[in-house]
Length: 228
Image (tube, rainbow, N blue to C red; front, side):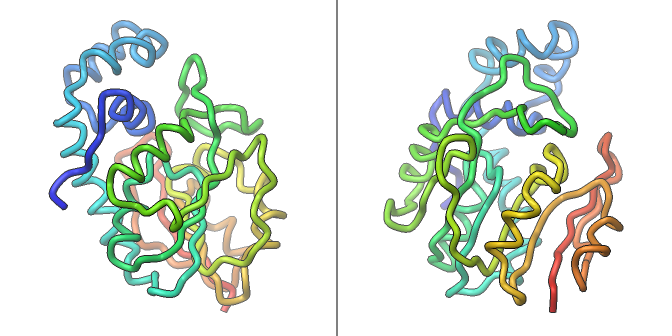
């Protein structure tokens, strides 16, 4: 696999989720016209899907290289706020794991970037997520999709839980804390990006920083959380 297969609608969604996939020109247009115009029109009609595919594939490969050593072939994996699922495709291709997705299923009219305390901000589509997974070789019997707002969430135990730039980055961890307590085993690991890594030292026995973003507004850290 050299690049992901994605059409214009999926490329548009990817850009809303990760603005770094676009070039400097489109970022400048966002500043000039505002995020609403950018989200509804500019980021849909002025993007190059092939360029977005290449950029997204390269970005997901970097993300995968940071966490692949924490994953095993028989792990049951849960992802929260995966975006369009590029990282999960790479995980599945190497390990052939079953992966469960918990997602929001709407795009806010004005996409914001920051910590949404009320858990109302979202920019994803389960329909486009499923299409992207299937188009890139993810077998339908190897993943499950759950709408956070409308579905009963899975209650099984997971070995690895991944939430990059979502849980405790856009959404307060406490909104999901009780649920995670139900689905994590003592040996499970949680991989997240956070602006407050010391907070997690009060919850988990071991917290390891594996990445630090110092050039972003939130200056986040990616951490591995364990209870043994």
